[in-house]
Image (cartoon, rainbow, N blue to C red):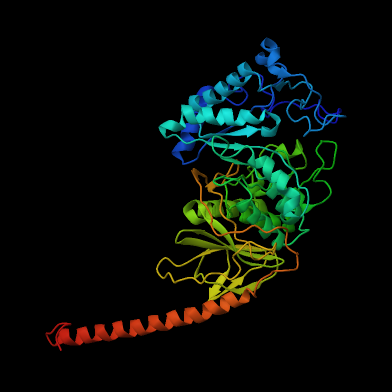
Length: 527
């Protein structure tokens, strides 16, 4: 029975485990799982398991054979049973017994089961479900055993958690508790990263899906994800999941996006405006730090309401705008795979205004500039000379930016020039347009979806960054006029252009001199 007490639901999704070490026969056999993982590895794709650590189904043998392994708690969300206050002992449903990780036998068995799956099928990591609902030390015990068993020999597993947190308010101080809870499970001997719920609520709820707030808000909270998490954390930004209504249906905002049952009016074909928002969201997701999660179907704009309507069968018969969005996503994911700065670089704001965000991703001497424009046609002077994604046009030192577009640039590989340091590159005073996040490490792992993946963990550490106390005024850019960066660069660029012209003239005269002397039977060293 569903939480509403009316609709019946099934456990097709695997979150109600009925056996500890067997493959669901509806999905296939152990041999077929082995073959799938092998094929994925041959194609450069890493495979993670989703490990349910908080509970089992009442038909599970552990519950029948070892009832002392389980808590006897209240039903989460019921009267006097708050999800947070009773997070360690409440039951998600009355048919889902809650594991007591303080019981040594129970915890040892669960850890052994997790390691069995990793080793038996040559998996590359694990997502730990409902982390905050198990004993605080459970995660560290599991991670430490993984380190001892596998990583001491050089095998690196990526462990990420789901610690579902909310959104308290628009000030940084309002959300410090949310960050602290997520942080408490990461670090040495803990998780490598977690789903970035604070960022999801900050930018998907408020900016990318609803459009209620501007790109200064998007930039500010993107920067906060670089300086609010523990050093070395590889966070997982996302725009949708199996627990949320589909992104494109939220972007459409037809009033049906929260409906979930067959008798209700549910989301269907999204309009063009929703696809425009989806491109902006995916553009942001695949060009910012972390290991992005792309919920299968979002790459092509699959519609859907709340769970379980967001879990419709995949539609592979794509055409029109759905196919265009899939191609957009695939091309950008491939670009991320090929550009290390997009995957592991440090985020720094170059310019931000109401509907335009320009930022750089930098790793050592390698950098890319990303332009997200949800507004009208823009023109901007920038210190990059090659467009590698999008339909923007470069002429002289200016970039003509299309409306509702995503653009990625780099320095030409054959003509790299020194780049002026942006004026507004420090986080401080809570002003948008000035936020440089100190990178917390990154990894590209597109879960679900059709994008390319790269599962190598590599922590990067930003320096010299201070933390703003509050969210910026939505109308304030702070600092000096960012337009001056383009003007300063133009004068520098002109100087370098003049030097190149002089050098080319000298080279041309030498060639002519050499040719004349050759005709005379001489050489370059003869006068």
